[in-house]
Image (cartoon, rainbow, N blue to C red):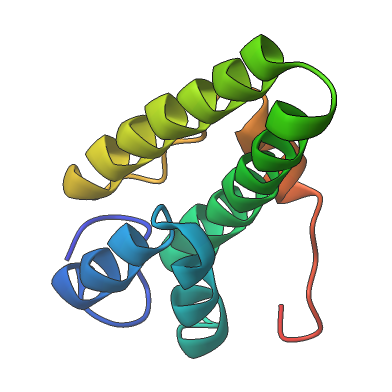
Length: 109
């Protein structure tokens, strides 16, 4: 077991953490592995990416087509970056998003 993983196996945590970067599926790891710091970090980052995706989808038809697509492209890029971090089994924070996600606290933490 790697340092920093106190509960559950890394492989089980990784399997769930991958879901954090696939749209609304961030809810699955967020709500099922409440005591895994690894999974919670990735799920919270997935929450921000999902909000960014929704924001991009709202901006495209209403405000600015280019800006909306740029936001969606950034969300996809950050999602791939997050998936890469999960595959390494590390608690890698995404730029900007990682800092914001640490500020979110739930009752179970």
